Length: 135
Image (cartoon, rainbow, N blue to C red; front, side, top):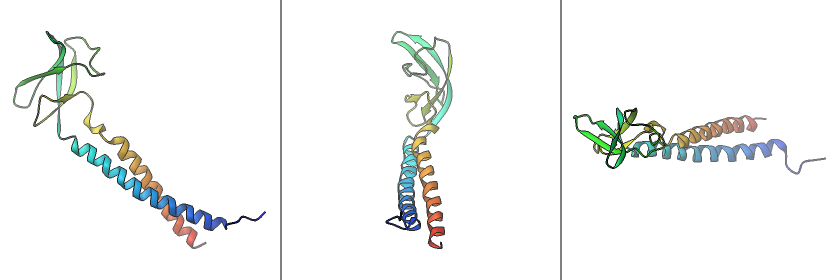
């Protein structure tokens, strides 16, 4: 049985498609992932404590000038913690009343990782395509 297309030509076309998709989409996703991380702003890591107040359970912490701030302890990391428990917290340098209990380094990490994988796929497919040209 004969193939309607030469196998080397078929794999050459396939590697060209994978190269273009891998490089273009991979670069776009990586840049978007960096943008998500960059747009989230600069966060300062500090230690906070869970406290009970009239409004319910809150998180209290000191900013870098010594002012005390608080926000509701309603995140999935803190809603089951008892008053007096220490937690790691990140707050915005310019707006210290905004806080988060999850690491800001993870912002856009999935996009960056997917972009790197696709970029790697595009580079490998480009190399294989060049090798196939000489066969």
